[in-house]
Image (cartoon, rainbow, N blue to C red; front, side):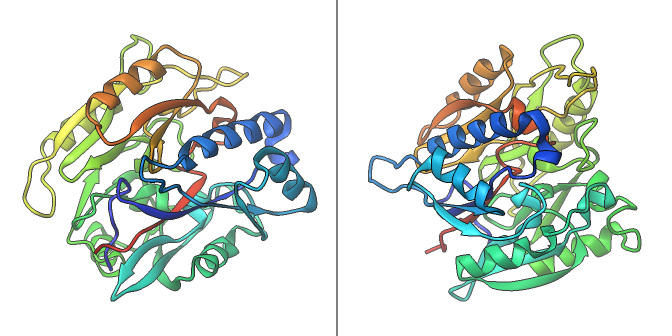
Length: 337
């Protein structure tokens, strides 16, 4: 199976609309507004007129009405059960093999048993069917947010997540590496030790490091003295600087500012990250949290990207649920020609 880099053209984006008021509480309606804002930005067509179609799962009549009110006819609505919005983790990882779209479906256990919600177990099957893909079950626990692909045989992940006793306690690093190669068709697995502090996903890579081109990877850097992520961000950058990809090319590491110390109403640290962007045909949409770092992160990233506009979009209310734009989306790549 071949999994393209996310900067390659995509056929469709899937997401699940915030629905459960008990989960989202006062953040439900604000999170819905943030969904609408970032989806409109990521859907925008490029100069050749290529847009990005979006399918939004709706769990209830009220959810469907909310989507129609926010998005009109600009998205396709699919009625389906789901526990919450994190389609990157409950949905499949798409790639191509012999002209067929394949959806690799890992076992999902609620990020190590933390949040197991009825309905999440069917999301991968629902999305794969809607995409016209062959669903391929994978015999290990993992989530799409734990996997970052360069499009030419390399996948990046963290030991904190995939080797965590709450995921795959019976598997060694060598065994997980072998299964990732078998299921995903990759040639090389790169391992960072840890992800962000206070991240309930146990170190998902899409909050830490992302490829913007083969051999070119972006990670964050603390710019404030009270940034709780400073040590782990420097550790990740150091490890990346000593890695090479499946083709033997050393990684070029680019650093953008971290959001810094972001807390909830009780003062607890939230795992805010500007890395959790989504990519459309015209824009790369970067989550921001009302701090000066957001604008600077966009400026730095734009210096290294010439084919798209890098745009900030607020995500503080989505973050209250535990993630951001990349976490709530599942993309279908176009087949490599």
